[in-house]
Figure 1 (cartoon, rainbow over the protein chains, first blue to last red):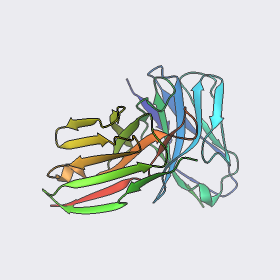
Figure 2: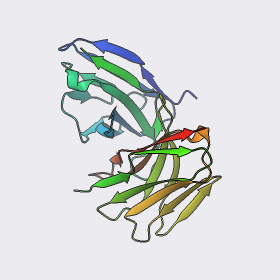
Figure 3: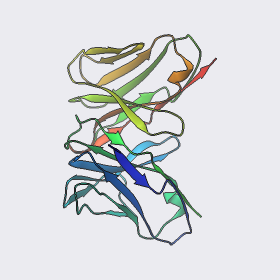
Length: 114
Length: 111
């Protein structure tokens, strides 16, 4: 099992560009989520999905879109990148939804917006 | 809304010394999780606590859930350089499907 796979690992964008961060899991997990990690801010929830076709907003959703057309994939889209979106992005998944479920994290995507 | 505070933000210890990080919530928790993130790595699940007053051990790590289920601690006995990293608590966020994290405690171990 590969677990949670995120691509790319690193990316540099110019302000205003769009891009999609990919996240795939092969564990048949229902629940998937995206976090951003900034120095001193910990992990902040952007969007999450409790199953295919269902998504919802987390703590910091502005500037990001998500979709969940399959159980395996949960891409994160930046529509018009801004320097404030420079961060490390982590995708996570768990067997089912609920705060009592251990989260499996991907290796992260390190994104810089110039 | 619920607020979570994790202290300290940073901790530098000499190898062999003990280390403790605390996670405090403004509301009663149904459960709490602990994660470790090595430098340059991703968070890795360590343990979950569910019951009031629960204490769990993993080798040199001791996890405790407060009697009121509003706070938790992670204690490491006799730290080693392999313990270096950031330790996060994870708990129920604004919605029952949201896991929110403390800001973490970054542990440095001086050999």
